[in-house]
Length: 60
Image (cartoon, rainbow, N blue to C red; front, side, top):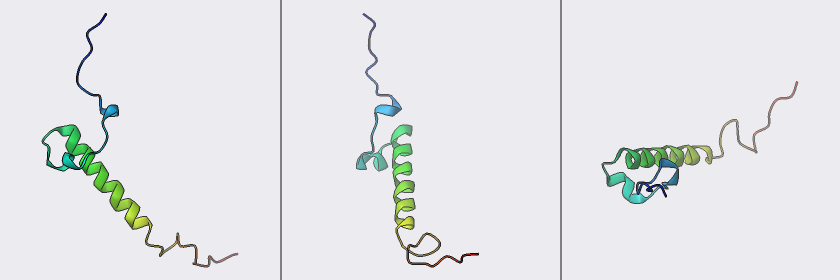
């Protein structure tokens, strides 16, 4: 039976709040990606602009 590697692969990792404080490259990447997704989500939920359901679009 082959010996199993005890390290996790990137696909097995999920975001943890403590990732912001770790020095591992994977943890730093998870924290940065989490921040970017959170910012993009909040930016998209304002309800103003071209994506607003209340805005009337001009018809030709």
